[in-house]
Image (cartoon, rainbow, N blue to C red; front, side, top):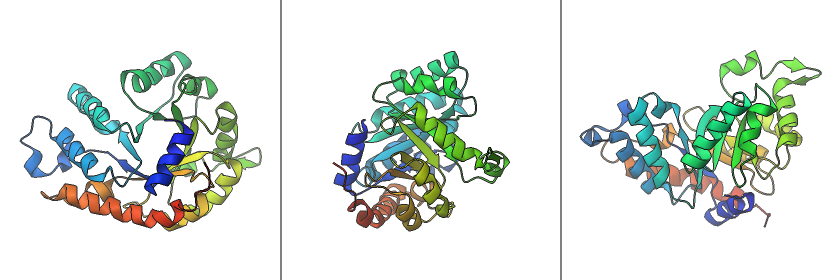
Length: 272
């Protein structure tokens, strides 16, 4: 999906909601446990229930990799049923020496039908370049995260600027706003003003809304640009809106609620 297609999709649906599929088999409702692949049945119903309200889905691969071959099967089946009209993110946080990263890129961009993959920038340009070299695909680089450990490295100063600022500034020169996004956590909304000054045209993938306590209104006001420029990920607050047989309808209600809150901000998008 190109940048223009993504912007158009956000404008048409008046939504920049990304639904996270961090599917823990232990939290799949009881009535689905008799299926051969309960996690897939759960994902299928969540996707069917929420697709009218979101523009993207993000699969956190750790929840599938932990189950070995069966988990990978669920991952591949889930990726295959996400509508091609939606932006498909593999939240894999890869990043290694060049030839290894090339194989990771092939995994998610050739073997599986993802539009984007998250990567860690610690090892530098050669660890990210193989992802950037795929036409029509997106590399989502960890920028400023909301976990407590962000203070260990991301917020340290280096040459008069925080390391996360140096990451944003440097990585933005490796790619372009057409193929590079950044992960920016939502729990410190005031930081978006500085982040936006450093990367005025880039899209951000924003976790931390919902269960983690981030404010959708604050993030929307501080992080959006004329293209929209953000995808707000919500996982648990939608996936686990109910643990009962009504889990899908409750997920739809939760997704619709987030989408309604996004409408006035999405209507301000002027690009295209």
